[in-house]
Length: 193
Image (tube, rainbow, N blue to C red; front, side, top):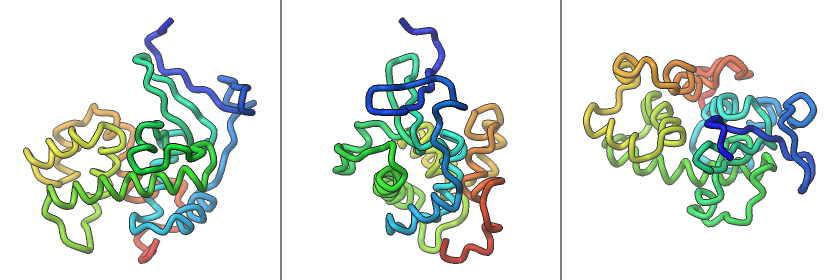
């Protein structure tokens, strides 16, 4: 029976779950995420992954969310099984930081290529790119491409048009650009991170 609210659970063992974050959440640090990012070998900045982890699960690797419509997403980046299959990783353990980061990297690389083409971007990509990549994860690639088609890639203008959308009001888009308040190094110093 749906309560109309998202359910957040934390997998403790394969068959045991709890909705008590204090008792069940397995937390990692931004440094742990950076290590997993390094092992995933991606050109998407580490700060993007830190920002996504902060907003999706507040750094809990074992969170499993079930939306009122039955949609289930897992792990630190809240990836669905369908998304894992989309990048050939259907058997990946999304509750393990390393595997989840690898799947997220492949998924985001695919979405980034679509965004780059739609916005006609060249390297180095503007910082706004990462907010739109976060948008593709949070609102879907279709909504992201539609806003690029209608308004271009301009994060400040998007925020002014949509101040009440959660990706704006929560700071999600800004935090995937900067790494957020938990980022271990000021993001402008991360020339390669």
